[in-house]
Length: 423
Image 1: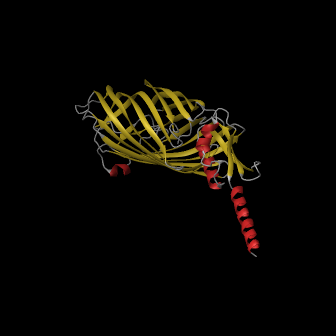
Image 2: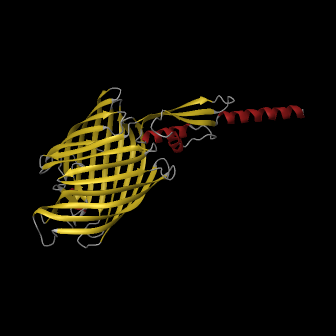
């Protein structure tokens, strides 16, 4: 009897250990990588050899890989291991993007001069997901900048970004119901630390040292507004990003929230120190097989200083298509963009997409009150249409053309060109 009981327990324990071993990952492989280091991709996935097979981790790893600029698509396969016929072999299959990408933003309106920005970016420098790039911009004056971003420089979750910009534009300055044009130059360095808490939550923290230089060009003048101003400044920045978006090639589905909070210190009372914060709430929804509904809500406030150099601007390239190039400023902003993207043609690599949108927003005047948001002179609504010419195998290779037509008081209209989706 004792021998039978002992044999029974041996059989049960042996079966239990066999089942446990059959659910174990014995190897993790990455296939399809050509320009990307396989060791780099393997360092990003959560599932490792020796862990139990977990479908939730597999799905999370695929979402993480699809989120990378260097990956156009990713999927996984699970095979029984041939090593002793126990456990599983997991293979992550990736389809790479072409990542050395020129880009261009072209913008104009019926009231503004032609301007453009061109540049070149490599999103997979050294095969390790490092972004290295630079740009040149002509907007009445010449500007340029260079940047490097290595989100996994120190570990799987921690990295660094560096940038230098010498940015010069002609900026309208608004005061006493009049306008003047200034030559504005911003030159400085920025250093940001990057950290990922988990798959959905990331943070960036750092700062910059820069110099702002304003020189009067033309227009109205006032004794209270200097004609020339050069100020050394420092900035501390915190960006918190929550993302729960599913990627399928160029289709997006889900929610993202990005909080940007900054403190700007100044050495001149004409441009006093101030706080500025804004949050972008973005929601995407797949509609059938060919549609994508996209929405962005931006809520922003800054220190309510009565200055003609207020931080929030109304601009073609930032918030409202067709409105013009920096036509107003404020110390608060509420902006909503909604658009429906529909695929008209899709071939092996090429996509033609139509776009119908409505951009709207309102601003708080410098030194004003919250009631400014509801004043009709501050509200701007611009419906419009556009086209997207897309390459499925090249990251962000989306050439867009949008035409916005204002329907509110004293509205303008105009074309906006660019690379990448508007948001």
